Length: 322
Image (cartoon, rainbow, N blue to C red; front, side):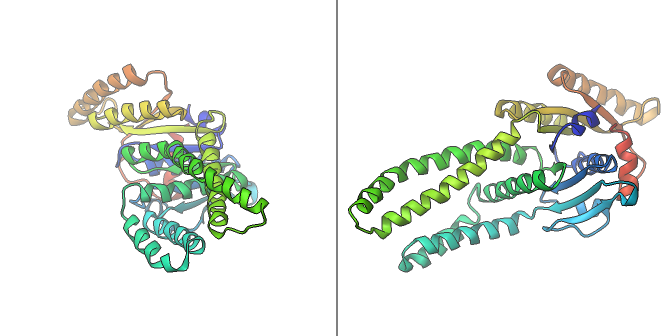
């Protein structure tokens, strides 16, 4: 079952169409692992910020405790919601600080203007969130046994998974441009001549190298099937099934290991009437899913009469994922 996939991994991503229950599934799987004695961190990158509502407590941009095993267990579960806007602001502030330090003082106003224009430019939020994901992976692997990511809807997640490779390639291009400046700086240094511009270019190169190495480490984790798995959450309906098939194909092309499927809100079998008709309709779309992704393990969770909230509700939901 899926818990077997989760048990043997250090990093777990959950993705799918909006509204299919990704946050609930991520939290339930995380709780199951914490109750088994693991130290778990659940990270939400979804701008909807449902993690706090689900756990019935305040969850924000800093890590907070969600569950503790007590004296009988060493397991624990912490949570954090990555705020894209706040993350972007912090990312641009850090970039601005670095640029103002490296650029001539008379260009400070120009730096600020360009950063303000970049705030809402395409890809800025994704790049900032990717930095936070890289940080969460690094700190999570160092301090936890498992990091579970509750991701944004499918299209956003697909772009995010592609970014480590894209950013590494972009950084590599910038580094090649800096090679000539570094060689020139080395030649002048050998002659005992100090060139502030060349020294500044060398520092920029060191910064770019650190950034490239970080993205390469992240990509290495994302594509390691022994460490990472991506679970796809969906409802047995047309759009969620089609989006799931598309996302699975994208992830596989990127080399991200897809570990299984969670079909959520399944109409109960044998209920009769409207639910029976719904069940038959769902069966048709699950047949499509079987044709496209029949090689993946799948768990089906029936539609529940009420909402899943708090540790008790998540524990009951988690039992269906075992």
